Length: 563
Image (cartoon, rainbow, N blue to C red):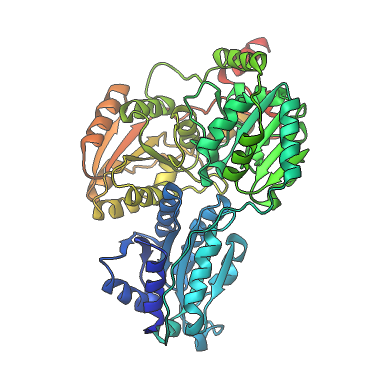
């Protein structure tokens, strides 16, 4: 077939099984959009309110399905508006292909109208990127982009296409796309033997599960591994749902806002097994004091993560599902009853607590869990509300918490929730936001209304930048510099102006009623929740401290009493 570059783009998307793309048109990408119009019954295009919303929507679509998310933007500011979303996907290993169109080949490098070197800009935040200056190379480049986005550790890839390349013609030969094979070439017998030996020698093992276990779809193998090793399990923010949050061996999240049980347990264990984790600073606290009594055994697909933040005693490089499957075949049943009992005692002594009166973030999350029966896909922005969603909603399956972990992108959630809802039309999607985050991309309510999406937007409105204020309270002598949001924005009126339903609540009873109405609705609903500006996320580890120094609100009150 002799096709234009724009036609080749669409045919390549169809080859990859792409059914939904997110974007915003402009002059340089018009040829692609014109062709997209011709194929609108095969590929659905979601017009977002802003290109950043498109990149976050593609990200949410990818995280919730495991498929490659696709976003489109024109040149110049259109392309640069994707950058935050691309960086968000890069930090959390999300498979995404961003297709941008640029000025014609002859105009590149001449400061032409709306020209920008988007490939140069995104080099540090993509797995790879391409500028396609020859239409003959376009099809194979797009196919390579999808392969790279999915292969090994996933991530975003950008393809920039000059406008004249989208108009030029070339011969196109369709190909059948084979699924990517799991990455296991680096899994050696010696590494497996060493891991088995360390596990068998351990008396106090602890498992730390991260996003790699979610990406690898390794939940079943992980459950078998946990029960064979007989060890307690903690997770990172990105690992939520890889292991059932209701399982008796689950002890809650690790790190800065992790549970006391997990932080104490990891600090006391003699073997810490990191499964698809990168040992982020928010998890380790003071790295020199992290798990200092333990040998470290790490499983990861990316060799760059080995010994990067925490030095290991042994490791296995490869796909998590494959590693766990092979270890399960080799491992004999272990018994650590005394160790398990000690951790269970910690769980009973140090449960997550919050004030039992008034409307608060933890109460809101627990009520959402109750009303959705734990079946919702939870999406969050970044801040206190994000931590409460991680702490108080029990994630039983992978890909049910969609959140920006590595980059911590305020404004991520609503766009991502749109992508999640498009990919999962029969699931209830709930986006949790703080008022500071919500105002960053609240224009995407209009997108949700246009698409008739029944997603629920919950705003925890404390009229401050909550997490920053928490730090200012605890570590900056209550100098509330630029964190008070005492303006007159009415989120309910704003939602209604964009065609959504809105409720303002300030009591537990009002929230329960409003959320039930939202569940019964078939349109986007915003619930504006008035909570106290001084509510905090507990427990907490101070910056630079060891995770064993985790403290709660009760600890602070006791300390103040003794001074």
